Length: 124
Length: 181
Image (tube, rainbow over all chains, first blue to last red):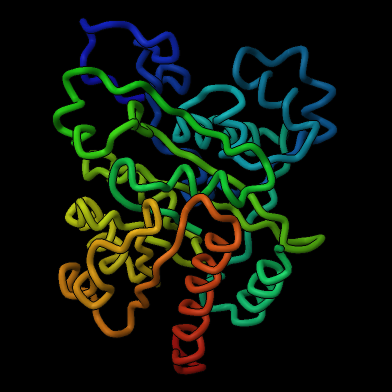
């Protein structure tokens, strides 16, 4: 969260905590290629070890019993998007969540582009 | 897909108009200090600005979802763009003809990143203050960049703008030699 005016009027939604405090200051995920639209689901291991996890890790594992994107996790838990990427990548490396990555080079995949065009054209 | 453009230009509205989920966002009320910087005086009624990210989602079919990410328009949030642009199908750069220079950072960034984009003039109150050729000239975008008009509040109009982005990306993909990386 950008906060230009630390001594000004407080916005209840703005925290003065530095966002990357939650990641011990790491701004880069263990997997630096993790997309913000990647789909995240709690694994069986994540579900069984949920009670031993702490804070945001636990929140994410609880939330992702329903599959959702990294961006949605960030919004639901009020996390900075970059922080959510770091935390999800950590959980994935530990096997607590399974991440389904989008296909690579989508902008060159004519079949996929046409599929999306047909999908949009169906919107009325 | 990326939805970009200057402050108050209609990114949030466009995402909200077509998304099937309630758009998720992190928005903070502008402080009085930054109000001058962000020209709210030229955008009557706009009192908040996006400091993080708006996004919505459209289900294309059983296996495919299209995510729409509204990026903060200002240069000072440029550090976020890399994450958003990575893996994107293309971008829609929304332009308010009253403040055309607000979209320069986005246009510059997408040109450098090689992401195909379409310029969409948001018709506030149905008025087109400049003609489309003037906008193309002012933005100095090439003939290969489509410039369209749309209304961010109208679902079918937003759909058509997104279709323009996809068709542009498709023609770029088709014109690429088959053995190119």
